[in-house]
Image (tube, rainbow, N blue to C red; front, side, top):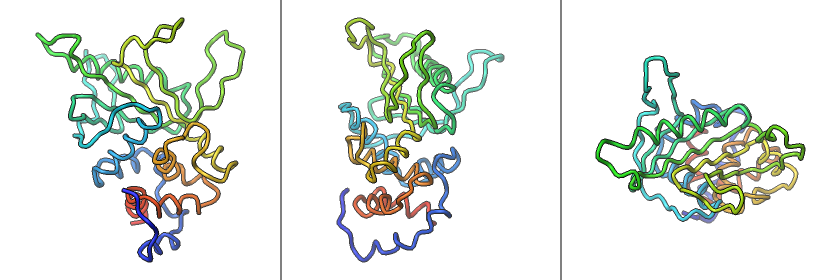
Length: 242
């Protein structure tokens, strides 16, 4: 939903960004993407998938309960920020975190396992089970694996799947883990002075990240430009301003 700038966009220039809610706070994130217009969440998800060239275009979705069922009374309760189901049965789990990926990896894998495991019912074919996708916004990068001395490259968007470690053939699409480093994005934007940098090739993905990390973006005109260019971004910023 691209749009050209008009006089109706003049309100953008009057926004006091210091007064806006920080979308990195899980409450604000859930409020915007579950209580607002569904097109905002759909646009964000499509942007994430397009950034990794995944052939999945969402047209509609259903918001589900964020609680993942316990298998026993002693199990640790798992609560997601957002849980949605697509029209084809794919489950999407979304989490917003203000800490780094090193502390988050085990949690997201556990959430994926629970959601994937509870979908299959008696009599169902294993091969017919729908994928479960985790999208985690993190406040730091992945740490090096034990015994690996080379530094891990700062990467804004990582896609992790189950694959053969020798020839890198994807074993199954049942697990799809997206890790998005908000710190790396803001750092790169502030250095380059624009949003289409590094591994944010897909335009909408970069625009959404500029809104989500707007507290860390030094040049607010970058966010204003993204808002003027795209209807969904304008809607999100307007909602935050209200």
